[in-house]
Structure formats: structure tokens, C-alpha cells
Length: 395
Image 1 (spheres, rainbow, N blue to C red):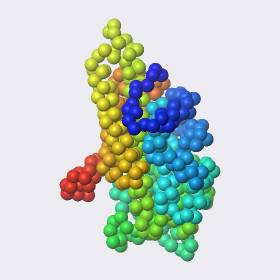
Image 2 (image 1 turned 180 degrees about the horizontal axis):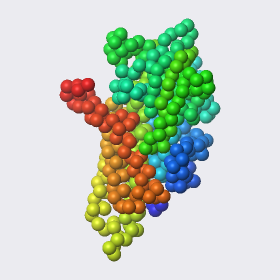
Image 3 (image 1 turned 90 degrees about the vertical axis):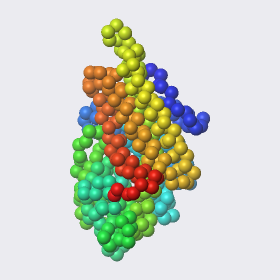
Image 4 (image 1 turned 30 degrees about the horizontal axis):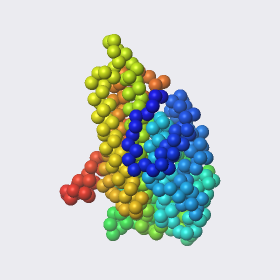
């Protein structure tokens, strides 16, 4: 590919610029053909994931005392953005970077000492978390997966859907109810988070994972959980107070996925600009046509705006704040900017965009999902309306 369009280097340190260059080197062997084949076969990109782990990027947010890199969320944002900027699929690795935060922020000293060093070394992979359910959707307070205390164990029954990477994770962070919604003081009470040994649970049949084929190769599953026994020692945080455990990880997730969207958007613009400067139709380069120029330029401006909001959210999060508007606003802006970039790239490539060998149709498919998941933009806007602007709650 030709030189990349310069994305905003706003607030990047020399070390973060070096991180970008290191990620460029890591991604170089994993070209369009590599991702096209895995997409066509619906297979997991083992070699890419292993390379990210082996170079230590997945443990960068774990404190040094537990064998990690001791970096903060801004450094992780650089990594995830640059992975996507190179046309690679950051969704295959992202959760392994931040899901351990539940243990780090809410786990006991014993849990931190037991799990974090093994996660940092790659001995254990915590790449999966189970929240969403078939009948609850975005209303997490209505999940029904229930954990009953039985001596030193919880017995769990329920169903989860759209749960990724369970086949490639040793541990599962599982959100359950220990008090029914109707019996709780408020809807967000009565949740308990459990750390599940996935290998043992799947081998025993206590968790049955059924793959769901989706528009994006994200290894998505539906989980049937039947009489799953989890030691009380594997509870993360207090019983009944698990909602805040899950929510505390949402801000880091928003910053990270937003960075992916920005990287993916710039990748698509890189491709579009290069092609527009090379492709000739009616005796001239198509990049001379304003019908090509304006959508690309508009998407570029949108991506830069989203990037600035992302850096503001990351800065606040790193300082210990809880930037609800900033992280959700960044996710909203970045997902819309990515879609604009995808549409501009598709139009620029014309009929060739539909050909699998170019990789545009695959990136275009991937660009649509972020407007809906991991949280719908309509939910984000409703939250801004009543949470930030003081309008009446609609739900």
C-alpha cells in the first residue's frame, strides 16, 4: 500500500509513535489474502493472535507487579487503532487486553495474585465474557441467567448469546443474577460476576457453545448453561453488586473499540485515496471527480473529530474519571465516521469493491456492525439525551 494518510498525532508521545511502528511491523505478514482466507473459511486467525500475545501487547494493561507492561488505556488505544489501520482484525484480540480489568479493579488480592501473572504470561487467556442474553438485548437488567449458592459453590443455569471466542479462551467472565429483578431494591441490584473455567465447563457439558454464523468472522456463539458449578472463590467482587463490576469495564471497552473504528476508517480511506489516484475512467483519474473527493474528505473530517473525542475520553479514563458522555460520544462519532469511510471506499472502487480479492467488501461488512454493537447508537443517543441533557427517560 502507498503511504498512509496522516491521522491525528494529537497527544501521542514518542513512545506511542514507536508503538505504532512496532504494530506496523507485526501486521506486515498478515496481508489481505490472509484475512480473506480466514473470512471465507470462518476460521480463527490463530497465527495473528499468537503473534500479538508473543510480543506482549495483550498484557500491556496489567501492572508490572503482576508481570504486565504497566501501560494505560491511551497506549492500548494506539495498539488497537494501528492493528486496524493495517487492515488486520483487532476484534480477534481486543477482549484479551481489557477483560482482565474486572479482576484488577474488583478482584481480591488472592485472585489478582493467582490469575493476573498467568494472564500476563499467556498461560491463561481471558478473551471471553458473557453478558448478553436472547430475551434481554440491550436491557442488561433483565438477564435471567441465575446463580444459586450451594455451600462453597454457585450452581448456574441460563442462556447467553453473541458470546465470542469461547473456543479460544481458558476463562469466561460471566454475569449472573443472584437476586431476581422483581425482588431487588433497584433493577441494577442482585447481579454477581463469576470467573468460569471454560475448558472444564465445556468438557463436562455444563456449558454448550453453539456457533452463530454472522456477517463478520467474529467467532460468535450461543451458550446453554446447565447446572454449571463455580466455586464461590471465583466470584469477582461482592455478591449482588456485580453490575458495577461489569460497568467498570465498559468505559475501557468503549475507548478501545472506538480506536479500532478509527483505525479501520483510516485504512479504508488509505485504500480509497490510493485507488482514486490510480484508476482512470473517461480519460482521467477518478480522484479528480468531486463525487469521489467529497465523500472521502467528509469521512476524513469525521474520523479526525472522533479521534479527538476518543483522546479526550482516554485522558479522562486514565486520570481515574468516569467519562460516560465522552466514551459513549466517541463510540458514536467513530462508528458513524467508519461507516462514512466504508461507503466512500465502496463507491470509489465501484464494481471492484464487490470482488472479494480486493478486501473492500469484507471491510465494508465489518464497518456496519459497530453502529449496532457492542451498543446501539440509538441507545447511546438516548443515554446522552436523558443522562447528559436532562431530558425525560424513554426507557
